[in-house]
Amino acid sequence: MLKLIEVARRASADEREYRQVFRYETEDASATVASALRELNDLPDLRDVDGNPASPIRWDCSCLQRKCGACAMLVNGVPRAACDARLSVLKGERVVLEPLRKFPVIADLMVDRSALFGRLRELGSWLEGEVELPARRSEMAYEASRCLQCGCCLEVCPNFSADGPFGGMATMVPLARLLAEATPQDRARLASAYREAVFGGCGKSLACRDVCPANIDISGLMARSNAAAVWRRW
Ligand code: SF4
Ligand code: SF4
Ligand code: FES
Image (cartoon, rainbow, N blue to C red; front, side, top):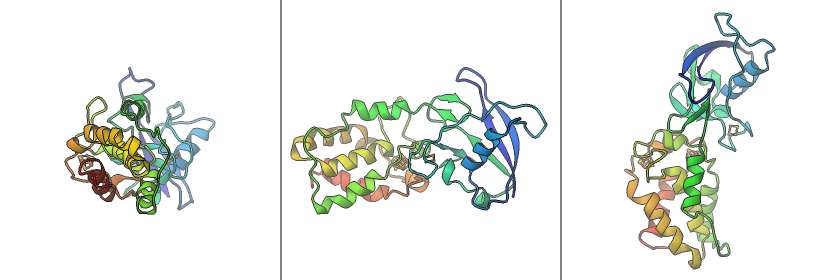
């Protein structure tokens, strides 16, 4: 399999973006965008298709098993986990890789998602009391616990911006987990955070659901956490 990997590049946040295309060939039908980037960066003398020398491509990764969310990027314009994006199922020879556009770029495909984690901190998204998890809420807590905090859902959300008040699904899902696990001591505080950061801002188009790499049941979680935080049906 031969792919031409086009990468949006910039050495730092202050520089202008440019494109560089790399030739990548493999016999491995299970090769992913992540494995291609790793192999290209492992080359002792990385060059683009025109033979120009190239610096290693900067991108984030950790687990390489669709568990951590670090490798989220745009693959042919769609937000995805690079370690879950198989090259063999991407149509055409050219694969275009760009950084997520809702967050500041650090370099190449690396973005600074600290606004996402900062918002969760500002909202007080933690439990102060003990965990209380009756069986009827355990499924909701488990489903929400699968969130990678990758930010793919925010990329397609028309209502989310990194400096706006609406937290998007990357905020809703962790709050849904906490609402499921909270004792009455924590519920009112978390419900208030949910109403402030999630409920009023969501247009319910569910574009976010379609790109979630973890296939989280976003609509089901939203219905249950709306019931808990807004209608107080615990
Ligand atoms: S349902 Fe629509 S508005 Fe709500 S978080 Fe998802 S993409 Fe954004
Ligand atoms: S809800 Fe899905 S897309 Fe959004 S941050 Fe969590 S895992 Fe990523
Ligand atoms: S490297 Fe962890 S999800 Fe891709």
